[in-house]
Each structure stands twice: as structure tokens, then as C-alpha cells.
Image (cartoon, rainbow, N blue to C red; front, top):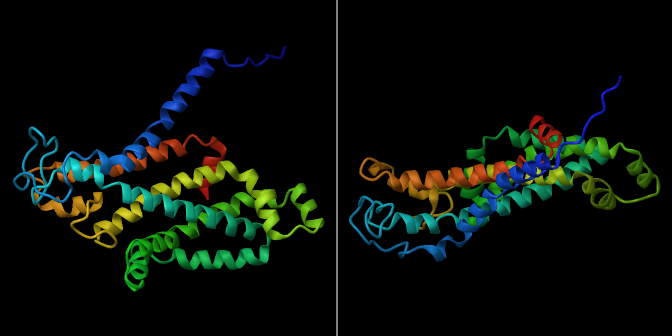
Length: 282
């Protein structure tokens, strides 16, 4: 006798939704605090308020850095540019990869050239690519860093979208649209990409995490933000010699970078499992 499957009880469904909400909640909270941080800083970020490497005390919950500036104020002010730059990189990489990868799946001839170009770009180490782009860019700065990070992340993302779009490009409704004379832009935006929304969200989250690491690595190498700017990676670099005197100028920004990356990754993991496995495998 066949056993009939039973639907999960309402309480189980609600608990699952609550768990997913709790997993997704840290990302917007961390982002909101990071963006609002400069207005929450209790002290000026560039003015000494205590002795160098002063330990935590009244008015200085995290102590002071190498020149006596408030660590908490610099921590609150040091993440906004990182987050905005990383978001810009993630959006540009995801959008560019969606267009190129989908076009490669729809046009096999174009796809071969896209694959070859991606292979060549992936041969270049990420740090070296960032150095080459930023140092050769007239004036350097934030735009150079964004361009370098996009160039580093685009080849991998294109591969993901090309693999995800291939089955859809071979489906009947797309073939009918091709037979009806629809152009490539219509096929990309109206036929294929609407069926890849989960892949878009998953890839956006993954590329945001990757962009955070690329941007922080560049800042640690003093490519982009320059002292005395308040920046998490610069805080780690500048205060490393005094970590035994006051560890918070190094530990706090390191934890902030990790919290931002992990919260975004946890939110991206809420994408359906089959899509997540396909993206990771590609």
C-alpha cells in the first residue's frame, strides 16, 4: 500500500521562514550601520583625542590608534567607501556577466571568443591585475580600483552565466523566439534573463563578497584610499606594529570586514539549493 506524503505542519513552515529571515537579517543591518557610520562617530576621525595606542577607557570604548585617534570613530567611518565601492563592483560584474554569458549561450560562435578571453584574463593573478590597472590608470583613485576589480571578477562570473543560460537557450520557447526573428537583445532581456533571477541574486551576493576582499586587499597595499583616510584595511596596516599595546585598532576593523562578508554570504545562501550548487560548481 502506497504511503501518502504529508505536507509539513504549519508550525514547521513558519519556523523555516523565521530561520531564513534570521539568516537574511544581518546583511541589511550590517550594511545600514556601515553606511550610516560616519554620522554615528562620537569623535572627529582625524583628530587625536588620547595618547597613541591608549587602552579602552571612558569615552574611548576601543582605545586609540597609532596617533591617538578614536578607534571607534574611525571604525564607524571606515566602512562606507568600502561598501559603496564593493556594491558598485558587484553590480557591474553581475550585469556585465549576465549580458556576456547569456549572449555566449545564445550565439555559440561568440561564446567561443568569450571563453577564450575569460581564460586569458583568469591566468592573471588578482593582485597583479589590480596593480597593473590602478598604477597605469591616469591619476589612479577610486574609479581605477573599480575598473580593476571588475576586470578581475568578470571572467569567473561570465562562466557562471554562460553555463546557467545554456539549457534555457536550448529550450523550445527561445528557439521559437529565434525562429520568429527576435534580435539578440530581446532574447537576452525578455527570454533568458527573467528565468535566471535566482542565479542573478546568488551571483550578486558572491561577487559582493569577492569585491570586499579585492578592495580591502588593494587598500591594505595602499592602492586606493591613502592615509590619513579612515578605512578598515588601512587601519589594519597602520596599527599592526602596535597590536601588543592596543589590539583593537587591528582586531576591530578585521572583525568588521569579516562580519560584512559573512552576513552577505549568509543572505546569498538563501537562494534555492540547486541554483547555489550549480553556481559553486561552475
